[in-house]
Length: 112
Image (cartoon, rainbow, N blue to C red; front, side, top):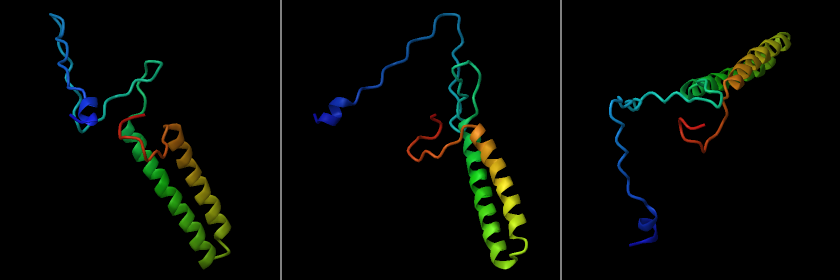
C-alpha cells in the first residue's frame, strides 16, 4: 500500500435522520447552494458574482478601447469619450466590488 493510498480515507455512511423528520434534498448540481453569511442572511450567489465580474471586465475593456480609438481618430472628442467611459467603467466596477467579486484564479467555483 502506498503513502497516497494510506492517506485517502474511505467514505463513511451518513447518520440516519431522527424519526419523524423529513430529510432535506441535496441542491441540484446546476444551481450553487445559497451561502449564508455570519449574520444569518443569504449572501450573493457565486454565479451572480461571476456574471458581475465578467460584465465589469468587458465594460472596462470597452471603455479603454473607446478612449484609445477616439484619441487616435477624433482627438477633439477624446476628452469627452474618456470621461464618459471612465464614469461607466467606474460604475460597473463599484457595483461589481459591492457584490464581493474578486479575481481568484485558484479558487474553486462556489467556494468563497
